[in-house]
Length: 339
Ligand SMILES: Cc1cc2nc3c(=O)[nH]c(=O)nc-3n(C[C@H](O)[C@H](O)[C@H](O)COP(=O)(O)OP(=O)(O)OC[C@H]3O[C@@H](n4cnc5c(N)ncnc54)[C@H](O)[C@@H]3O)c2cc1C
Image (tube, rainbow, N blue to C red; front, side, top):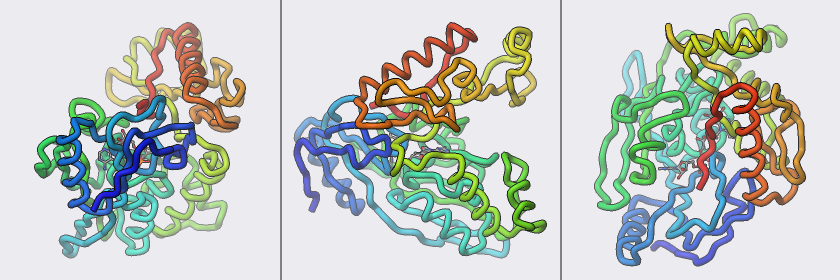
């Protein structure tokens, strides 16, 4: 039976560690718990809010209704043949543990996504990505439950409308479904993706010329640990802003003023601009504003240095967005979900 608590402090359930409360709160351990929560929500006319690992949220006010912390676990192989394996992970599994599990089995597809925080269920929300790979690349389908009717529905890849840090669940269907389980198609043999970031250089530094899947995962963990602040020691929510996609024409005009502005092409007419470069050039990298600031090595990562309030964080976010707009005429967009 679902144990519902009232006025719960949920600070510890988010990696940004801002002071935050939920009007009502319960931990989900099964599909039945969720169905019970749906009945409760209807009866009490209160909304439901799903919380995974809390590594991509900024809770700026008391969360209305019932917050459900997802701890529904389980991993199972649903199909196996000589080429690939279909694996279903329940949404409350920790993403990092699930990747480690796939790497231990020597099954290809998720290794470049090692050591990303959060749960399996939140991964399709923003099509998580790192080191040249996104989950859409090995996604098969997902089972989701309608938070109003309790009906289950299967979403294929095209149904999810995956894009850069986007999916239908972050847009048109925001807050409407609970992602219950995600199935991935993992390959028995595949070419390792080593060209992104410093993966190849790190491997060579360690004398590894012909890396295994395990070598790649281990290397990415080393790089990420060196580069990214650990939220346990320095509370943060990863990249706060998304990289920008702008037209090639606009980029060429900007390049005249900023010849060293980095970019990479994403189509014939569009390029991507790293938001970190814009924030650094606007002077925010390593700068502290009272209890908050942008990390000294990673201009994209906003840090809660000491018991910051949501207001302080949002003020800094506003200041950065205004400065970038004034300097470059470009609009930054938050990657983090502001609740
Ligand atoms: C240090 C650090 C590094 C990071 N690096 C990366 C990176 O390299 N790449 C990347 O893409 N992200 C990265 N992130 C962001 C984050 O880890 C991912 O976005 C992750 O998928 C969030 O998972 P979560 O379970 O913590 O989601 P939460 O923060 O709990 O929730 C995020 C959103 O998803 C919704 N949600 C959660 N679970 C479900 C569900 N089962 N059904 C429906 N909706 C749900 C929530 O309501 C909320 O709107 C990083 C974060 C940190 C702190």
